[in-house]
Length: 136
Image (cartoon, rainbow, N blue to C red; front, side):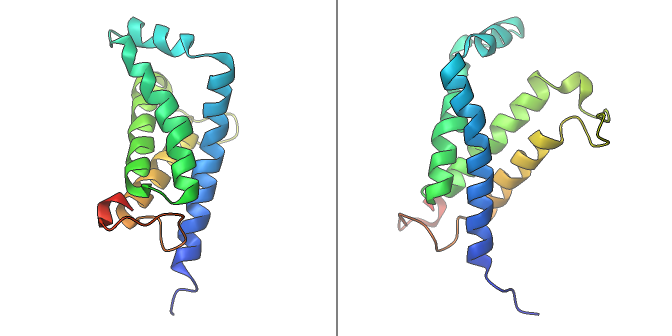
């Protein structure tokens, strides 16, 4: 069976992954990044790594939604989710939540959505299409 519309599917994936993650980023913009800086310092990481959070929770989702630099944005989101699983949820990574799913299932959904877009690109519905395939 021929796919109905792969590009529409990629657009929906971009909008949902980027749109839902953007809420997390806006919340951090409103309430600050001090807890992230503290957590990084507690784990022995340099505090400047907190800058990756607004980049991957605000800028990358906006780029995903608009279809600009989709592959790089998807990879950034996937890396952020990997860091959150390791730094924040490592102790509970394979525990079952009260609703019956993995405790890190939201992180895994963002990670897999980002990776999917990294490998596929954003499709033809985009505001800007650079000539270089890896920048799409």
